[in-house]
Image (cartoon, rainbow, N blue to C red; front, side, top):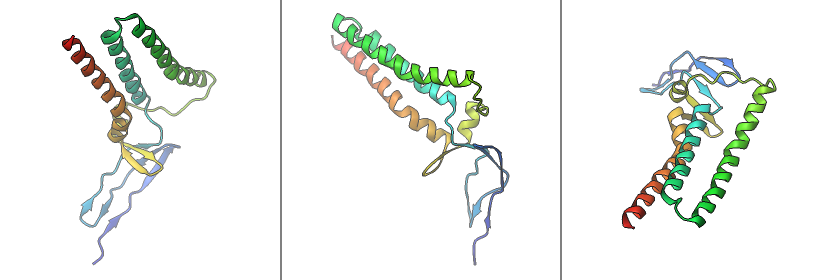
Amino acid sequence: MTPATTIPAFSLASADVAHWTGTAKAGSTAHRVAAYATDRMHPGVFGLAIGSYGAMMLSLWLLFGTDTQTVLSLLVCTAYFGMYFGVPLAMYRLARKSGLREASAGSLGRFLRGDFETITGNLSGWSALSQVLVIPVSLTVGLIAMGVIMKLAA
């Protein structure tokens, strides 16, 4: 006996958004069907990543910014931080001013409930968010822990 397969029907609302209207079942196992799928990362995810790196820089300044040589190194790091995130932000704002309009990204919650399309397949929005944030958040937590331990040992 062959398992029944229901193929989902979908409609393309824009170039990067697919709204699924059906269900997906293969045999007795039901698969998760996203109501929203995109191949563009939500701007809120970038904001969270920049915030995490900003918290890392703040923790570095608060914990290690006491020595003159360290302050010079932190100034260089802060300048690189500004360039690393400032140049893409300036380019994005110039593109918006020149009339290049993108489709509305919707809410961050909508992105997290939906799917993020990659070359190797779809990820859930939560998986995409965790893959973007795992390194900056881990570095920030590690630097804070290291700084606290160093301050307590001194």
